[in-house]
Image (cartoon, rainbow, N blue to C red; front, side, top):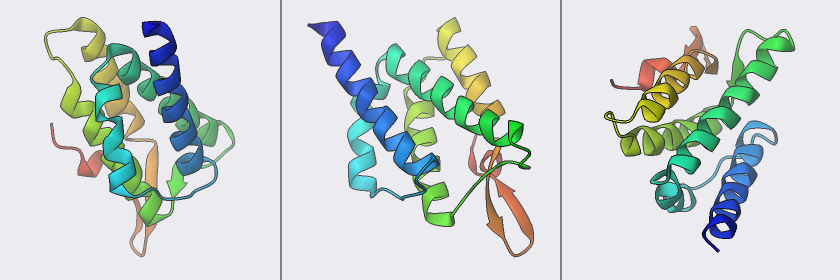
Length: 126
């Protein structure tokens, strides 16, 4: 039953990430905050980390400078980053690896500003 519950939660995360990163549809904070419980689970943090990194890598492999998101979608994505980072256990080697991948991924996700691309890494506080 636990595995089915986790699978259901991961499916919900995947749907939201698809909406944000593929369809470029922003999500309200009230919907995004509901994933905090999912990100309390190691499986949830790892799933988010690998999925968002896969999307960012696909943009780079397609020849883009970054995964460039509209500002509102970028903000929704940053909110999810902060939820995941807030749940990391720095005493866990698995979470340290997730943190490394998230920070690396933050250099591949950007929004277009008048002055150029603004990357997610600029908004993440260590």
